[in-house]
Length: 163
Image (cartoon, rainbow, N blue to C red; front, side):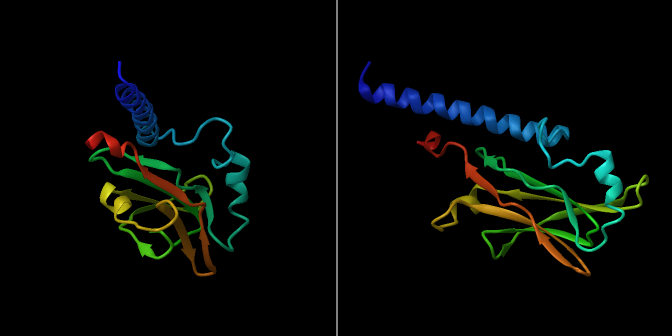
């Protein structure tokens, strides 16, 4: 086997691994098991009850996670906040992206919960020409102010497969 074929074989193998990781990550988001065990993002029942006491700024219950855009399938970013009136995404600091927002009041605690999802397409990632990677942040707003989530990096999962 030539050196070029070995390199191409290694690239394809690593791409398959990236694709499998991306598919697994997307499936866990769709299945609702967004968080791994040991993650501190999901509150315990005691923390849920303490949300009633804190009515100053919104509180993130779920922040967006790093994701991959796979071929023609966008990356789905999700966030959830308590005590928020509005939740939305911004990508790369200034670009506000289309956000689907849902809200409900938790019947056990009486706390308003707002969830937001956004789709990041391959075109959005590839059209970004910044020095850093393509990043999106979730913002939760209420009458007392707003908070910003940790940034989630979105990458194209295997650019070289389109050769």
